[in-house]
Amino acid sequence: MKLSQFKFKLPEAQVALEPAFRAFENEDGTIDKVYHRDECRLMVVHRKSRAIDMFKTDADGNEMKDADGSPRFLTFRDIVNYFDEGDTFIFNDTKVFPARLYGTKEKTDAKIEVFLLRELNEELRLWDVLVEPARKIRIGNKLFFDEDGPMVAEVIDNTTSRGRTLRFLYDCPHDEFKRELFSLGEAPLPRYIVDHRRATADDMENFQTIYAKNEGAVTAPSSGLHFSRELMKMMEIRGYNFSYITVHCGLGNFEPIEVEDLTKHKMSSEQMEIGPEACRIVNGAKMAGHRICAVGVSTARATETAVGTDGLLKEYEGWTNKFIFPPYDFGMANSLIANFYHPESTMLMTTAAFGGYDIVMEAYSKALKNGYRFGCYGDALLIVDD
Image 1 (cartoon, rainbow, N blue to C red):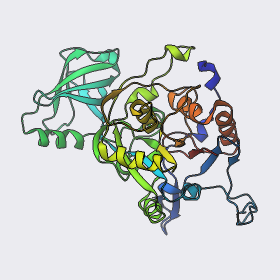
Image 2: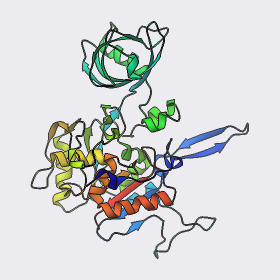
Image 3: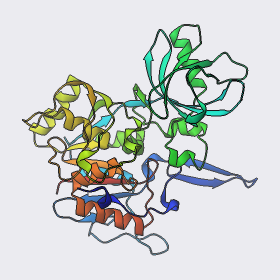
Image 4: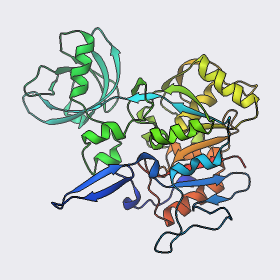
């Protein structure tokens, strides 16, 4: 397929800058926001029947109405109504760390954004980072991150046009160094959000799944952000199974595709691990004929990397740069939870590969017309195999 087939106009007002919330006005006129992960909208695509569900219905199948007479949209909590006992959800339990820091360049005091990607050498305090503006940062420059603290970094190598290798000059035990470094950072929100607002303390919680465990991601597995503790307890009571794998989500999902022919695009690699317990749960459910739901495109890409020719999940530890776009025959999951993604994004392409290009793009058209919110803090799309 071609890049231009995934182009559409996304109004800026429909890009979510924060999660779903309820606002309450205090007596002094100030506004408090209470965030509710599972109260975003949900759209459901049935990839075989090609039906698209947007609104709640009663027991007789009639659309339910709000007080003003308008149809009542599905919310993410309604996802429980599309699965049965024994169905299994595969979650990505990667944990986001506060990867975005702001420092100053020595002598000039120029403000520099440093985005931590991964630690290269624990003993030497070497980190692979991105810097902005990159034109101001050369080998040998020193960056200061706290006026009153000791955190200083020296640029020792150029890796890409924006990429640098930093050596942090901080002499202490590694655990103390990491705590100090991360205390200076903030939630690594995507550029389309931070171009409009700075990250807040709330974002470090909101931009993290409730089941996050294994640190290493520099962006959240956004489809998992919709799950609340209450919702997962409800799913557990209904007899759904949970399986956890780890994919350390990187910035490759946000890199623009610069070729029209999608077969020529190369994805950046992401580190992943699928253990024996995940395989046992998923394969047992699949062999018993239950649904397997991949929570997010990162999970779908990882399970497709590790699925065998027999359709069963295999243990895996390593890296994946698998790029999935239509047409593609998925071997593992038969349902998918996704967000509504930006035009020409790899996440949209993977979603279209799973659900079918035509019906997914029709769903996106309906989302645009009905005010759904796009991006990592936006609304959710469930694709089921019926």
